[in-house]
Length: 532
Image (cartoon, rainbow, N blue to C red):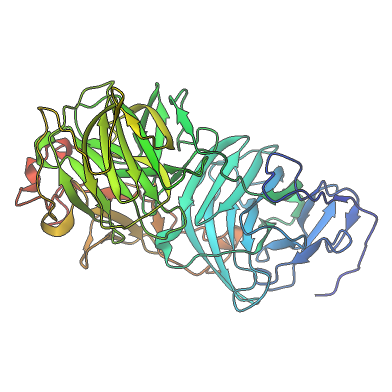
């Protein structure tokens, strides 16, 4: 498409800072002063061609917006070099209708077979299309994979999309809006740069306007010690960019001084605010413990596409029937390597410490026992895990593991103390390698929403099960291609978009126990006994 190159003097501020200095000035920013079409700002922008069949581009006139309406999407990426972990931030300008969208993009691929591919926070008004997408492009066409639902926006909102390792998350007006671990997806975008996208189905192309844009390095870990008491309310849990969900999990939220899982099944999160040494501990202070279970995690690999680490699990429903130290397996299962019978009381502190191949468990500062691992997971992050939101924590701490424990006794590696309530058993793997309640299902809708596939992790059979259309959690769809029509051009994948949360059904492969015995899932809100 030919258009006049009305290049007037503009303003783009490019401020170079160290890649780790996230709190400092951005590495690139602009307020789109002046007017030009197509947007260039002295070569600071390169167009994305894959989403614009008619050659539509960004233009600017004291704001950036498309120069063509539907079916074209105006897309641009910065030409400033950014680190692999980076952010893109926009201030939402005018959104004329629910058929108008704007959004920041990260991990934009600049060359190769996947050129123009990226992650997109696609934002609109209430009742518009609001999702995180992965755009798979090739320079001339694209498909859009919806990953997780996001909240609607209004003009003036500040949206920051951050790519950090395999995790992509969004901050709206300083508050975490969503977080998504791409690990289980099979396709992940790395490196690249950042940019923006806009679209409108209306003739008034400034109905999708971005007021300003900036980009820079993502946050980085700092120090080896961190702690929190979960003040306030957040969903998802952020705590000042402290937490990220493990692959395959929705993570945690907090309310009323308690941290709890977001879903009925297992919930796992780790702290990337710090970079603890290999000799480390994670400690939780128990909140409500009437049912469910949970405990601390150590040695979680934040860059792994699957779950990793070691876990101390306290099972309130049956302390003698599954409490112990578990290994997190890459197929989504857990292996019980050391069983014991804990006394589970609200307010108690439970710590899992790792030193070399030795794990040590503490209750209120007193060592309970040690276990020698197989050498898996020699280092990583510290975190926490729960089974159902009924099992909560009031505090958490992670740090370098010390050598003096409990009442001042200098313990030696391999030395064990077990108080009267515990018993030691030989190491064994439970039948099926499962933790109570651990069969994670993900509900996925097809493109037209005509049926749902219930996919079970760690197994090879699938079930069909209708589920109400909830909008939180890691619910997502199969990978549809954008089908262009009169109205679905108004935004990416407008038709058939319903998100389902991943759910955990109460099946246990713990010994030969029948699943019906787990009373915590016998309720009207469960999925029923869906695994049969």
